[in-house]
Every structure is written in C-alpha cells, then in structure tokens.
Image (cartoon, rainbow, N blue to C red):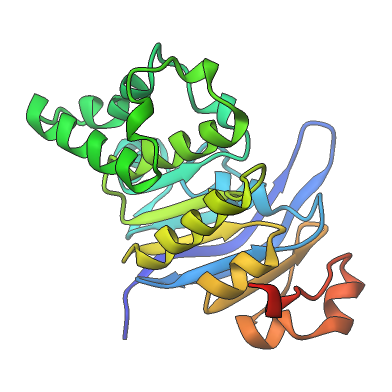
Length: 242
C-alpha cells in the first residue's frame, strides 16, 4: 500500500472576519495520487491548500510527508511541497524569469550548475524557455501562470499543489499543462473549477462546499453525478470535448 503523504485530522480554520473557511476536515492523500479538489467559490479549496505548507495554520493537525506542520518543520516541508498560487503576482517577485525560477534551488544551496540545469528543464516543461531573460512583470497573466509552475518544478517537489492552474490559459497552453501534469510522476493536489482538467488528470475527487468536505471518491463517479454537482453550483463537464 502506498505511503500517506498528507494526513489531516479535525482541521478547522476561521478567518479574522469570522468566516468559517474549514470545518472538521479529515483527509488522507497517498503517494502518487492525483487528487482534484472541486467546489464553488468560497468552498475552502484554496484555504485547504495553504495549510499544506503552513502558510495558514488552523485548529486540528496537518502532517505532510510524516512531519507535523509546525514552525520547526516548515523549511523541510516547503522544500518538498510545491505550491502554485491562483494569482501568479503573489509568487513572482524577482527581476527576471530566471531569477524567479532559480530562487528556490538557490535557497536550497544547490550548485550553480544544478541551478541552471533545473531552471532550464523547468522552463522547458512549461514552454517558457525563450523568456528566461525577460522581466516576469512584463509577461501576460497566462505566461506568468506557466512561470509560477516552473518555480516549483525547479525544486523537484514530492507533492505538487496547484490552485486554479488553468485559469487564463489559452487552449494550446491549457492542453500543454494537462499533458505536463499527466506526465509528472509525483503526488498532485489540484484545486480548480476546470472539471474537464480534473477528469483527465485526477483519479480521485474531493468535493467541498462552505468549508466542509461533501464527498470523496472516484473522479468518474463524482464528475458524472449531475444532481450532486448542481446542488453545489457546479456543472457536469462536457467530457466529449476534452
């Protein structure tokens, strides 16, 4: 049986405005799984992802790769969990694309050759190698999304956690993203409204709404349950078009 790479028990999180973003979440993710987290706006999807590397910490407990998410373990956990934010402007802050993608490997004290090799490979995977010298803030939103994915791939993470990875991507680069994620042999946790992407990549789906875990099961079964999806403001994906 595969190892547990994420364990969450009785996790609750409330924002300062009293919004109960997570309510009694219990969840396990196993090594090599591709898990889609779906639900309407305000379901708690992004909040849950932000608990995987300690950006947010609620009541209850979270363990990642065997380490409790607490202060003394954050550096180790963050080197193994590649988190891609929904808004790339929250993740890109260096002068050039190279600098952004190299930031993680440099801070992990890799050699110059290792850093350059990792950056080139990561940018090649997201079709952005030609932009290596460009300022990140001059890129389009979709290009920035691809760069943010490269920033985590360059660190060779064991877990890839993505928040709305296909938003604002044109059809070609959405398809390239799907193909890339299919090829990556690591644990993937994807929070998204793009149910077609989930159907192609994920074998398991978690449905959330109003901070609660509503259902957890096989992707095909949940994504074909039109009644349940509509009850939570979602539409059955047009799978024939993917």
